[in-house]
Image (spheres, rainbow, N blue to C red):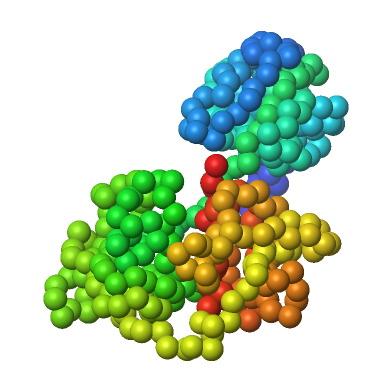
Length: 366
């Protein structure tokens, strides 16, 4: 009886293997029958992109449906490459599922793809666009035909999640005029603690406050109350008793501030003919520099209007010489003893203070 059971079990095992093999052999082979092709926009379209339209639609792409030898759910990937590229390093503009055959591409996504493919800001260049279809990522077919479009990208925006505070009032440069174009002195934000701000410089006798947005009174800081060392929204004014140099610091987390006379006479007395920014961000060989403008209100305060800077490093130096130079280790703001400041590619408004080497570089400017 045991032998009969053994024979029966062996027979069932052989039958199962045979059935599984047959099942594998009978699985349908899926082949592409019709390759998708882009139907809109037409080849030759031109796109001049604007940062102010970043969240808007740049173009709507549509294509003919792919067909396979068996009923399957089809996914699509819209790809872009440099004109004449082989799409081995193409960038993905969008993907769709559930057999959708159209997609809207936002300005910011088309812009970033063009930049990533080597596009120069504000320079038109040609790009090829293709559509690829796949079945759950297992079988992909790339359209043979391409459309060619012209894209003029903008510089793009650097991630800058910081608040900048500006001095405003009778005691500081710009007076009480909060106009965007008025020369307001910003506070210098600590490079490693974004809630700490300071400014060492010249003040006239009088009062002042702080605003975080030029041209608006919506957000402002002032002294909480007489005799207090606290600050708060829409509060009173800070008072400067007499013309001179002062050190003003505050913390937006603790809401505390200090305001005291700056008495380092030797540092105050040391002035420079010019201060410039220099580095690979301006010239790969550090061979040229860009001069900053000296404030008419405070001879130790310098600034530079919206200026294109490349990816690289920078320092500040005095009198076109390396005898006196300043730097830092943190992007956008900080201070140091001549270290190279890391700089991301963008257009910046720049502020510098030669009393303590503080710098502030605000990206994404026009």
